[in-house]
Length: 124
Length: 124
Image 1 (cartoon, each protein chain N blue to C red):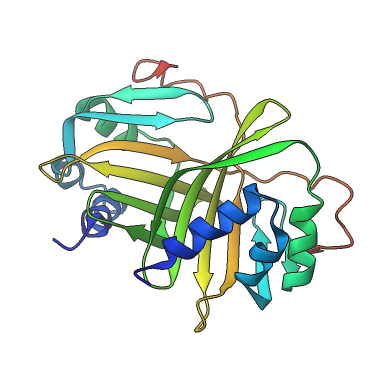
Image 2: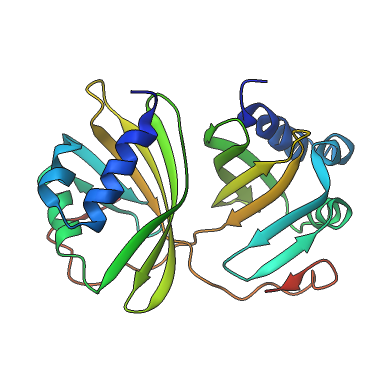
């Protein structure tokens, strides 16, 4: 295996396919999943698969960009949820058996730009 | 050069040092900087250096994790701004001269977790 991006490609393919058996096989039993924005944590493969399998809404996921090395990867994803686009950014760690052991998940939502920089920026 | 992370390490070091000459030398003249959350865009090295050099507040930046390949990098950073911690996640592209030509910058801010998943999560 060249790097962790191969594993994470399979992770997102299984997720998009709702193939929770394949998805689960990529995870370490003691996986830790963290959402720093809400300070929520899920411990263990079983709870994490349930979290994903029961996630509400009609969602589709695509990888926008992915980078990795031997044991780590980052992926920037586009989620279409009930017709709206959301960005997700995940950082992954693999254990010594190349199973996903740690995921840190960010959901950067839209906000209004602060005043005072309009002379440098355009809006798109 | 092994990969883009070497350039991006120098980018954050120059930024933290407020060494805008070193910082500017890493950027392509036609650099494009985008903030998808506010849909703001800055075009050109000069405006982008000014944006950073005049950014308000007493801030310090540290790299939490960085991943890259030949022409792309992702970095997860911790910013301490006036005593508060903020997370920043940037995706970088280099041009054919290994200058930074495109930056996509995300600022995932805290939010309240949705109801219905308390049986799977703990708070930290």
